[in-house]
Length: 237
Image (cartoon, rainbow, N blue to C red; front, side):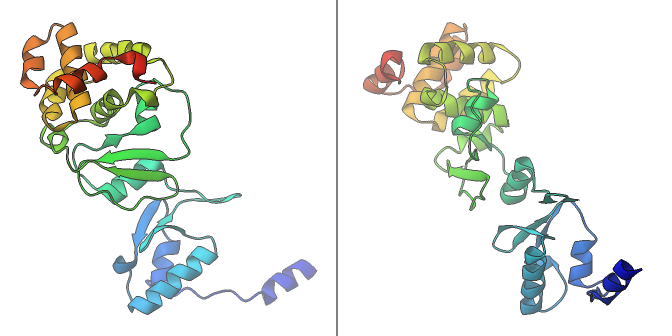
C-alpha cells in the first residue's frame, strides 16, 4: 500500500498522441532524423535531447538518432551494418577495409576497435563504432558493382600488412579466395583499372598464376619499380 502510494505521487510525463515524442517512443530498432519529426525545429531539438538524456535514444551523429530495444543495460545500440546502410545508402562498391577486410577474408582473428569501411566517394562522418575511408579515386569499384567481399579483397591486396599471417601465407589465402566462388575475377579485373599500382601488379600476378591471362592483360600494368616492390614479400612486413 505504501509503495503504491509513493508511486502514485511520482509525476508522469504526459505524451500527446501523434507528437514527436510519442512517435519516437512508439518505435523500435530504427533511425530517427531531426527533420522527419513534426513540430518546430527548436522544439524537436529539445525533444530529442530530452530523449537522449532519458536513455530513450542513442545519438549517432548530428541530426541522426537510433532507437533500439530497452534492456536492463540500457538501449540496444544499432548494428554496425545498419549504421553503414544508414550513412552510406545504396552506394555501390562499398566494403570493409583494414582489419575489417582482413577479418572478412579470414586473414585475422583480431576484433578491431571499430569497423573500417571503404567508400568509393566522399566518406560520411563516422561513429564511435564505424569509421569510413574515402576511396574516391577508385571509381572502378562502382562501375564493376563490387560486393563487400570483393572490396575487402582489393583492400587487403593493396596492403597485406593488415593480415596477421605472413605476406606469403596471406598471398596463398587470397589465391584460394580468387579460385573460389566468393569473388568474381572478371569484376575484380574491371575494378582494378582505377586501383593503385601495387594492387594492380598483385592482381595481374594472381590472375596469371590462376591461368587467367586474358583477365590479367586487361589490367593496366604498374611501373617496373612498383611491380617489383609489390611482389617482394620479404619487405612487406
